Image (tube, rainbow, N blue to C red; front, top):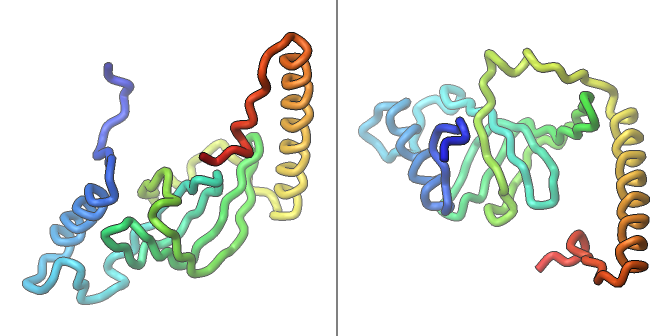
Length: 161
């Protein structure tokens, strides 16, 4: 089954680290250790990281290890609501590898060509809160309807394991 997606897919943090190692080594031919870069500014890899809690972070990859722990510089937290987004500056961000759900490189040439509109952070936070309240109301009605019909209500969102 071909879904149209291509590229490397990682099932373990080792696969991710090996892939980044090989890309670093091929980009920066050096006789030294593959992690060594003569000029750190030569390797400015802008990434998007989606965390387990749903947050989306965008920043420049500065370091990683065998556990897929990441250090991002100039990090922003991007919040999407509908076709709008807002950015909250976060600075340097250390991410524990077990919290990474998705990691992707951002193409700088295509980054500015989206159908999304940037709005002030205050506006996006209000819209996010309204969207969350609306979702909670719908869930409450759905759960009550299921309960009334004799079904067990599932509390997946609050049950982490």
